[in-house]
Amino acid sequence: MRDPDLAGASVTVTEVRPSPDLRSAVVFVMPLGGVRAEQVVEALQRAAPYLRHGVAERVNLKFLPALRFVVDATFEKAGRIDELLRSPAVARDLAERSKGEPDDGA
Image (cartoon, rainbow, N blue to C red; front, side):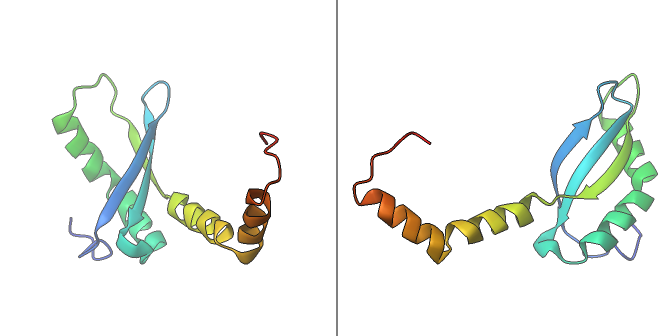
């Protein structure tokens, strides 16, 4: 890829969601370390026709999906949940519950 915004970028494709008719697909990506994520996604979008052609050479489909790239926010959300679970308030609540309060299944 000759795009300078992609030069040296390591990108992880975390998920691909094709449309029901397979005419389009949303590609969730995350650059290594989340560095320059928006810039990398814009470059991938510019390179979409080239990447689509690469898919066509490797996959036999009646229709080749149009590719749309977006930043995968899953890692950020998981980090936020982890941060919440490690907070002193949650640790206190868990400690109180383990001291003998009955588990109501909730």
